[in-house]
Image 1 (cartoon, each protein chain N blue to C red):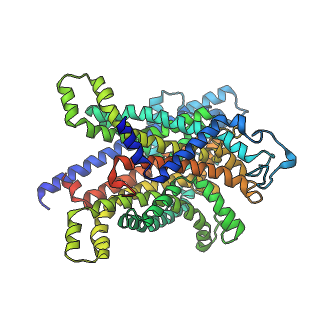
Image 2 (image 1 turned 90 degrees about the vertical axis):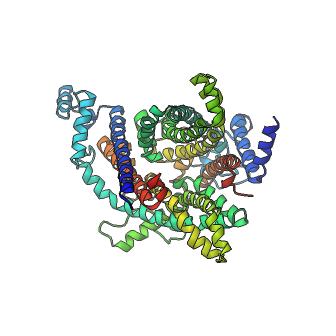
Image 3 (image 1 turned 180 degrees about the vertical axis):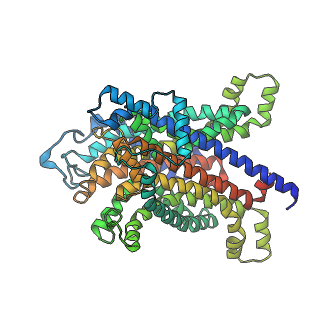
Amino acid sequence: MAEWRLVLKTLFARRVVLIALVLLALMLLMAAISQWVLPHDPMAMKVSQRLRAPNWSHWSGTDELGRDITSRIFYGARYSLAIGAGTALLAAFFGTLLGLLAGFFKRLDAPLMRCVDAMMAFPDILLGIALVSILGASPTNVVLALTIVYTPRVARVVRASTLVIRELPYVEAARAVGVSTTRLLGVHILPNLMSPILVQLSFIFAYALLAEAGLSFLGVGVGAEIPTWGTMVAASTQYADRAFWTLFFPGMAIVLTALSLQILGDGVRDLLDPRLKGTQ
Amino acid sequence: MSRMSWGTLGRTLLGRLGGMLAVLSLVSVLVFLLTRLAAGDPMAMLLGDQASLADIELARERYGLDQPLLAQFVLWLGEVLKGNLGQSIFLQTPVTQVLLDRAEPTAWLAIFSVSLAMLIGVPCGIASAVWRGRWIDQCVSTLAMLGASMPSFWMGLLVIQLLAVGAGWFPVSGYGEPGAGWLTRLHHLLLPALVLGTLNSALIIRFTRASMLDILGEDYIRTARSKGLTESTVVLKHALRNALVPILTVLGLTLALMIGGAVVTETVFNLPGLGNLVVRAVLRRDYPVIQGALLVIAGIYVIINFTIDVLYVFVDPRVRHG
């Protein structure tokens, strides 16, 4: 327990990490309780109120159908965050599995890693649009496609760490006393991989958030009728010259969330590798 | 170099080559499966609504689609190796021709943005390593992270609004009239390159910084300092030379990111490049074009990485002998 307190204390020594965490928590909270606290109905169209500049009633203005943008950002947060988190968790799960197998069993290493290399030869967004166009546009399929895109990334990181841990004396000792392979992997090696996996989780969360926005912008994302931050920016492009706020605010939601996630991931990484530490 | 180490060198290079060929074959299998898994019969799409079932059956036979998957793959790969990527369903021209027509804007965009990313990334990375923990390091790190958190299409739309629509300094979109001079082309490329280059400098900053910090902790740097050399000589002459080696790797990575980023950026700026082509092909379900473009783009990535791996063997003696 005391160890955890030390970890948290070091993590928050950089104030910016704390700010990032607070921002993320706020965003999650708003997404969770948005249906009760939103100032306006995110789906209610009011043609008389279309493309209004930000004012006291509509803090971020209204969109082309007269819908309140602030409300839509918070309502859309649940889709955007769910897609990001879902992708990150699934990619972390499958990537850890593959990475552990490749790192631990020498015979599996080369074939698995060549597959990972081949997958990573496709640029993220390109593989993403190809997969979504095959699977069909829907939130579930976007998560599925992005999981396929980011799993190799986790696999590579986990494999590298496994290779190091596998050679440590304590693993050898465990093997010498006859610990089974499954137990060795699950109980002795996996816990030591938690920190790099955590770093990858937060980074992939951010990447998936950006990728979802990109896919929606290109017209092969979740489907235009679902208000994610990506579809909101995509819809704004036609009106951006007259109504800059329709473009600006949903994009800011993406930037701030992705930035917070990366700062958090970076904070955790600094904790693990003091050599890369930003502050001394 | 003795004969012994030439042998090791040859073995290392052969190993790398084998690895690359394995990855390339896997890439081709992936591309083939991706488009074969796609929903909808490509023949029905090709022949249109008027085609009868018998027509479709006939066409399937002609294109070899009635054969087992493995036979289809062998047939397809044979054609690919001969340089035949098939015919675009929508444009009715060979895919190779379509790709060649679209390669130029993407190539220039990639070259400009990688150069810009290096111009921003390397000095910033060096500065933040040298003044580690100071305000300059904090600023650079924060900016780098901001660059990595910004959707490229959003930044593209913002700069279009500010610098093209608002200030009127740049064209809003496109690549100029067909046959326009290189100056017009350049003018059209500047904004997209600015967006891609700045956003992708983040990775280079991070790598340069880490690599510089590594080197600055080495013994020979302390020796150089104790000889009384000025700090700028130590950093720029002694440290930078070795720090640049790992940055080679990130150059390959950045190029790959550029191609991916180009997909979105070219769409935002309506540049008639490869990325734009793929997006349109996906929206039109023009599978031969998707297949060809994926294969070429992934192939370029693999070959760039292989080249950098090989350069590494020559540049870094530890890799050669290790």
